[in-house]
Length: 212
Image (cartoon, rainbow, N blue to C red; front, side, top):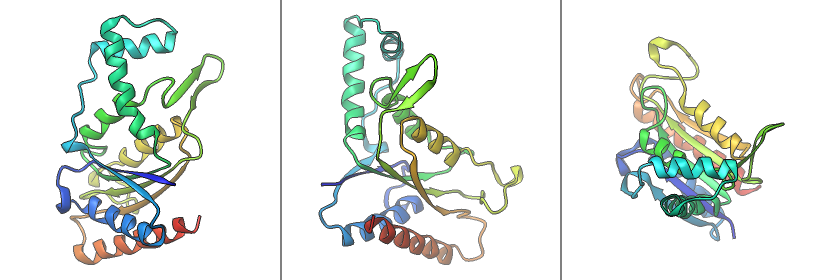
């Protein structure tokens, strides 16, 4: 059975345009694939621990092949527990608004927790990083208030949102990535029409994915 992890990076719940578009994608995918197992992860309602000194030391020790002390082992066990939910999924659906050109800090905190050696990636001194999440797929639903990829300009914002997410996923081994954009959400003469168009694009992409 295919398992999809739906990661909601907006704190606005049902009012979030990124979540609305992503939900449209998911509803369409489920309609054509009722056996799909869905795990919803609302990051703003999820207890995410601080990535503190013990966790940082545990990460370094893992990369160096050194043993953990008791505090570091506890920290690492907590990391593994959180990351296991991500690793268990076959597909990922991200609903991500753009905040100051990049991603909400809650999503960045989640990534900092789970992106760990021996869990999501490995490292070889001769060749560099290599991903451990093979044959997985990600769909990014991206929104932004003023930025639009059709008119890149510092005056309307810069896209470190999709570029960061794709670079991170690639390093973890996820290379099959699709995206749906509703950008801009504010500087459009017909916001509702643009939102409906984004939802139609999400439905079309979901129908394509359902046939794969």
